[in-house]
Every structure is written in C-alpha cells, then in structure tokens.
Length: 83
Image (cartoon, rainbow, N blue to C red; front, side):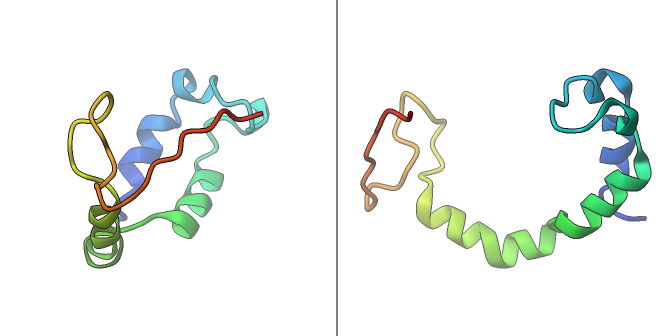
C-alpha cells in the first residue's frame, strides 16, 4: 500500500476540498489528480529521517514554539514586515 493513500481518502472529502482557493471546483475530490501530485511530492519517512531531519534539527530548537525561540541559538532571527 502506498503511504499517502489514507491522506487522499481523508482529504478528498468535500468538507476539506471546499476550502481550496487554487483548485477549481470541478477538480475537488479528484483522486487521480491527488495521486499524481502525491507521487511527485510525497516525502517518505526514511528519506525524511536520513536527509531532512538532520537539517531540521540544525535550524529549529525543538522547543514548543512562540513565544519561545524556535530557531537554534547559533542562528540569527531578523523580523521584518512584509509588503
């Protein structure tokens, strides 16, 4: 079984699909399109642990989050207002 099939089943439900602003209404719940997307972008657990988790641990402190500092202290945080 493909890891993401349960996600497709859950999120193909109209309740979730109806909140999409980028997917046209006629494609809501289209499991074929969802599967194609997930095949292209799914990150499996092993790749996450081997490649991306070490990078994540270098950037984030692992604390609960705001108002606590979420980035490791070796990094600088520059807060800016966006336009």
